[in-house]
Image (cartoon, rainbow, N blue to C red; front, side, top):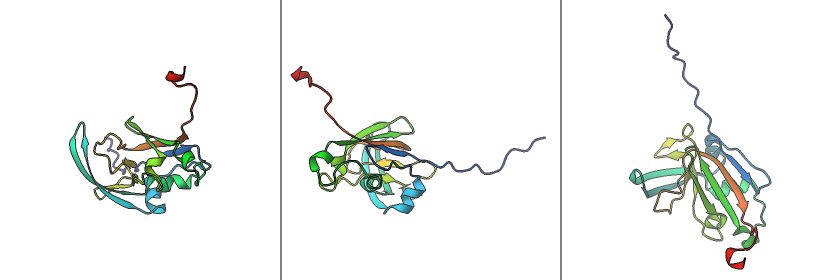
Length: 164
């Protein structure tokens, strides 16, 4: 008679890629986000289309501080250049969202967008990083188990329909 395997399963190490128009792309883990960056706290309430009103407390580093380590390829003093950059976020459940660099830049919107490492007092090492937009009243830009964040510049690529 065989005995069931009772050895503890190893906890998966969740990482995500931060890539695009940057000098030093990074692939952080939840533990590294918690260890290497200052943790900010956000108490949020948002309306989820499938689950109704949600209340949570998240903690994690600010997105702009994590991206800064990857050295975005824009002139830090060139405001118009910075305002053209976009961040595209992908999650493990297939959810995606986009926001502009200007939303999180301290000289523009200064939104405290988090890469959460904790939710409601629980570490997210196994579940993965949670993308949190605290000022959003809807939960559509919250992304669970972040798999990638791409930073890129919006460039005009031809004539607009009105110019054709």
